Image (cartoon, rainbow, N blue to C red; front, side, top):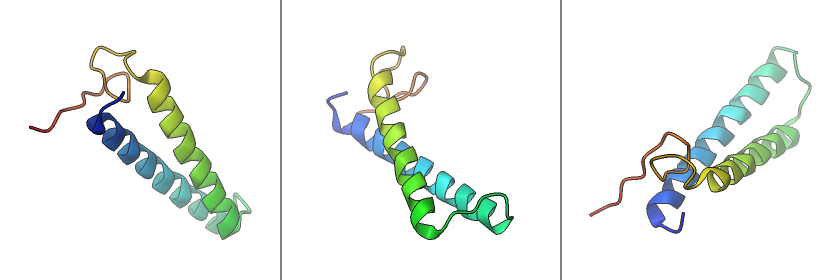
Length: 78
């Protein structure tokens, strides 16, 4: 958990989760399933990114591979 590779992988996961959540919130708003303005959609996206980072921290070292997820391998750069 104390390596640059771990935090790079965790950051990538957080950005990916934030983008997916933002697209879902905007899409659901456009389809009249959800009523969220841009501020609410961005807040939801930021919250999801924070949860992704917290999940990575809590899963650190729990799996057999030492990555930010239970099944991910963190590759050290040489």
